[in-house]
Image 1: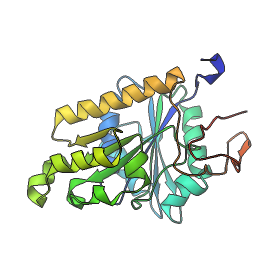
Image 2: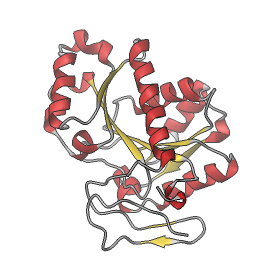
Image 3: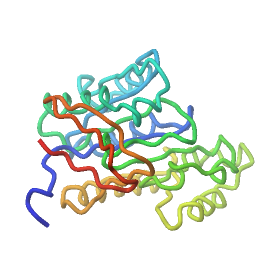
Length: 246
């Protein structure tokens, strides 16, 4: 692997999923587990408020200055796929302000089953569903369910209370994803939180080694970097690796 192919910036980890699936709580879990050993920062997305950022700041999982809200002002899908500039600049500002940063977590605003991040913005992405949304939701599919780096079935402890077979939901997730990883998670289950922590650490090791390739299910988004570098990716094919040239 050429030395130039090994990244020197932070890994950007996207967390997407429908409204109410527990994305902010999942990010809080990751921060609690890793903030003692890694330098972390968070970008949150809401349409008109900074609600998710305030939740994370109140939870005390990181220095509040390391949590930056982005108000998308429109469909939250737009800011993570169609024009990622506002999120990309927020991530790059955090990396500059708190250098060196190991991971910047970027939380999508609550969207629907079609939401995925452009690899112009994130290197690795998690798609979050929750048991309370119904056992059939995983079978409804979508690019995030099928092709995100990790599918999290969240709030597994609620299964008995909402009449959902959690084991079946996880099994069907694995079938839909053709072998890509699926993880059942509950904040009341320490084993699942440890598994989530290890997945993040493994992803970081792969990213740092230069072996991880961010794959997009569709065309990459045009965007502008803090230094003025412009990427249009007009000719990029689906699945094309995103490489920053400065």
